[in-house]
Image 1 (cartoon, helix red, strand yellow):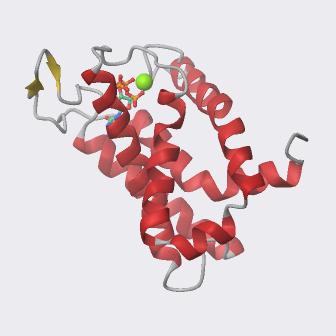
Image 2 (cartoon, helix red, strand yellow):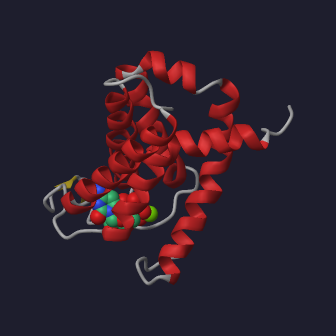
Length: 177
Ligand code: CTP
Ligand code: MG
């Protein structure tokens, strides 16, 4: 199989940017109030202190707003007013996938912040795609060709690690991953 072309990679990053911004803004701003309110399930926390209301709301808002700006530039997210649904799915889905990822990590006994390669980098992609598939399917299958989807899966993990390394250097994250 040929590696994706530069154009495919750029399309992939452009379409996923609202989800990327959602995820990195949640990490950049962080928060104090845990979504699980400190509740445990079995031996471990339901989600852990890494999933907060503030992070969720700031992440969602930043991702959604960047998507609205992108839509003004390129119109890539669908016709008006349906692009709002696509953008909601990308931002809310990213937060949902990130939460489900932590839920799974806690169930198998992985502590908050401990790395699980690929799950940590792709849980938010899965969440965004799940919501898109359910609520914006026509746009989703049209915009995400197989080539673009493969490019997303290939470029997201290194981009995610790069963003986390930047967050670490900026003193916003305690671990480089
Ligand atoms: N964050 C937040 N609220 C969210 C998502 C993320 O406040 N809904 C912030 C937290 O400060 C979190 C940081 O972003 O520590 C990084 O997110 P992530 O890597 O997903 O969390 P971890 O701390 O690594 O925890 P987990 O093991 O549950 O993934
Ligand atoms: Mg993490």
